[in-house]
Image 1 (cartoon, rainbow, N blue to C red):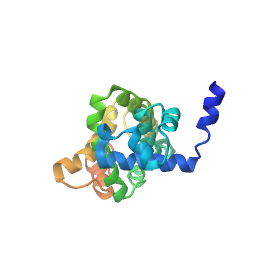
Image 2 (image 1 turned 90 degrees about the vertical axis):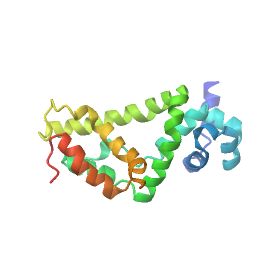
Image 3 (image 1 turned 180 degrees about the vertical axis):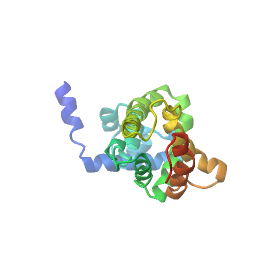
Image 4 (image 1 turned 180 degrees about the horizontal axis):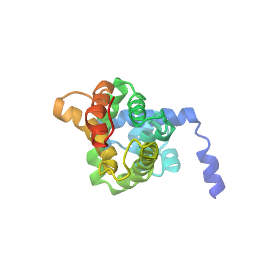
Amino acid sequence: MAEVATARRSRITPEREAELYGAVLDLLREVGYDALTMDAVAARTRSSKATLYRQWGGKAELVVKAIRHNKPGEIGEIDTGSLRGDLHALMRREDDCTMEQNSALMRGVAMALHQNPDLLQAFREQLIEPEMAEFRRLLQRAVDRGEIRPDCPALDFLVHMLVGGFATRTLLDDQPPTREFLISYIDAVVLPALGVSPS
């Protein structure tokens, strides 16, 4: 039976999978997580609901996989030789338009995370925990290079600082997050908190 399920899953080509994920993200931005249904995804992508459930198991898994698929590569692939260079390179992976779309996407998912334990669990397992591990490796390289003291109290809060800058830009300034804003924020807030000179 497992072989049959695997064979069925493998019928979806990478191109088709990317198309499905794109449609899921579009629906998320349009209606939010709670109003997004597997029926709507099936209609938008001209798929059967049975195929969607067989491939992803449910809405939470499908949404998280779509968000993960949309990410521009692994954080661990970035290694410029300096923490400042790494963080700037991280911000340059996406253009301003993509950042604005992702900001809208995360606003749509944020409330749902608190109300849907299955979504929160999938989000933690597939996005938060892997990215935290990648950030820890990025920071460990900076510690190993002598850029950051190993006992720096801000080390555990790097991701919190970055997410805070990204998430509150629209809320506080009524502006979308941009590369320029986030790079300035890194230089003015994040690096000094870590004891790293921004120059």
